[in-house]
Length: 292
Image 1 (cartoon, rainbow, N blue to C red):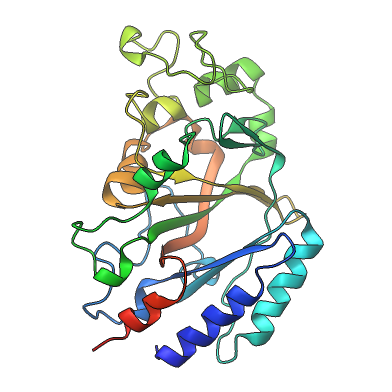
Image 2: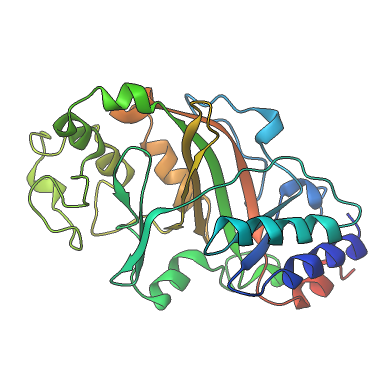
């Protein structure tokens, strides 16, 4: 991919940042063509156990994400980006929303299609966010990538009709939390439970989602998540899972490996998404990326 093409796209994305709209672009592995400037962990997202990835809504050279307070603002900004992105074509696109979107103790919370509030596992301060999500010098990454972040996007279809046949109590045992975020052992949502005190899983089942994702909640996975619900209106609804980390192997990939065999697996199906790298703020990274 040429420097001029990347520069034009970066400019079109930056130009859409106005009136409460936030946009950013992230680079896919194929844009680097195996060159030395590729972030060292960036690759095409592999298929995990139980995935059924649709090529039509997976991967891509560049991810452009547009967020805004309302649907109309997102639509208008997206159209501006596409119109100005000469030489690029849309591979796939999906609209998302955050039901009951709010912030508590510095954490962005929202309700997912399974009726559960999520986001409690995120850090509550900017320093902690930076520590988990932003690439540092000395990590073995190309110089231009320092200050950037690995972004994982997964389109996860939820079997909501099947899920809703279960009792709320059963749903909470599968998830490992109450719907409002409280822990099954009574620990408040803003604190961390001691799973070691429940080795047999009598209170929080051993195959509960939150327990398998992070068996030691006092050492949370080094990632920051920001997911969105989607509803295509034909029974296809679910979550656009998105997370950011400075290290893919220690972040998303470690969590995904632990989740194999979780009780929730029969209710979800990942159908698309990809691995991407969000460059550092500004545009100085473009010159550094294409420097011979």
